[in-house]
Length: 609
Ligand SMILES: [Zn+2]
Image 1 (spheres, rainbow, N blue to C red):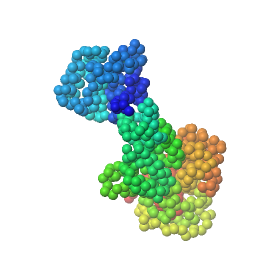
Image 2 (cartoon, rainbow, N blue to C red):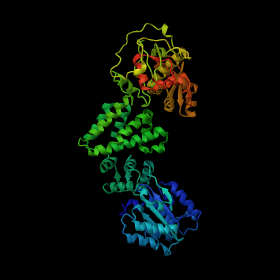
Image 3 (cartoon, rainbow, N blue to C red):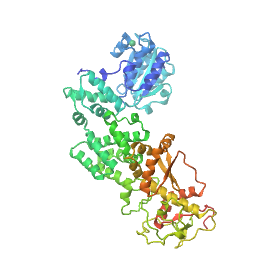
């Protein structure tokens, strides 16, 4: 190993060598070629992402002696070499963080009026610009108001909000982004090859992950590793140097989360704690993976997920088992843990609590009053429900005695219930008179714990016929109710249905991730597809058949499948109003308890007296 630090040694000498920041390179190259170099640039972004390297490249480019502007900086001419070696007196590098003495900075800036001694252009590179003293900022501002033709300023900062607006407005600004895991790892491989370091599989990615976007940090870690090994670097060495846990443990926890297996998840945490590994680092590694998974799932873009070559395959496998709402839930829980883990006197307890919370809370509808029925949690675990639309998890029950119910804010007359079982037959709902005599309820309604129907419901204790004022037919309402009961069943079973499709066709299952049930019309289930692509492919005869088979298996009756890409505005008709009313938790609870259904909705016209 050379004594020179790897980062300095590998600092790019030409635009082509620079890793990442393609958008900045392109713009600066164009400016050089077209002779439109600005007088002041501001490079912002996190540390270690190449701001100073870019500033040096730009200072070479404006001074390079190569005849072809498109080849500048050439890295070979006397100007380029003198700048690279730090000998060029006309390139003035200041670190505002260590050079805050008023006189120094101000004096240096004021000397900009003197022409360059050797080069074409005098270049001021001011690192950590936000640390400049007020006097230095004033001198800088004065200079930027009337910049001499022979000078340019390149300001770099990690904290752009601390740079005065008067300065910002006079600079051309570039935002530098973090290096991705994949591109950092690729660069590490190149460096290792030239430096004769042998990196075991997964080492470049592990180092890249630990550097969280900073190439300087990544090369620093590589250098440390190289200094205490004989050139062959193993994954274990990386883990022990960085206090990282092995990827296998993080993978085990993610697998357990995806399986909804609380026991396995807690065993994974215990395994990490037993090794005496750093639980905070382990949690950060977990969050990093979950984040990649979320990005992959939400965008379908592997580049955005940036998971590194060693985990691309794994990410793809996980993404087929994961659901966006669950991932969001987990990320919120685990990303908030760092502070607790740092301050808690109870070791890894916060992580254990988080694991249980992650897997247990998803079993309950997020905002529902959560009537705890035996078996409800188990049902919900296999069919997690989107938080916004709590779904009844109760299995269909035999016809039960019915009672009217009422949606707030206004009561609605209710007729005897068509029980949910009616909904599974695609025919219009059976008129109440033809139903078998009501059987006793098979479970005790949770009257004490459940929200009671609003007091103004004045609910009669016995089934009442539809109120006469309505001009809508009871059949229409009954059919709509039957459809929505089926829809709720489909929604509740949706994750299971998707899983049921998988053995027949993983591709169709993947398509279903881009669709959700929004309606049932008689014997047709309507899916809302997220794009015309999803709609067209889901509706292909062979794909539709696969889904219809699975629907039949889960719903116990044949349903056709239809896709749409538009949500209909149904707010004006009875169907839409019933659908809206059923979204209300109180209405739903009442409908469930009494096995009732809505027959009409009264406009909110008469004020309460
Ligand atoms: Zn040159």
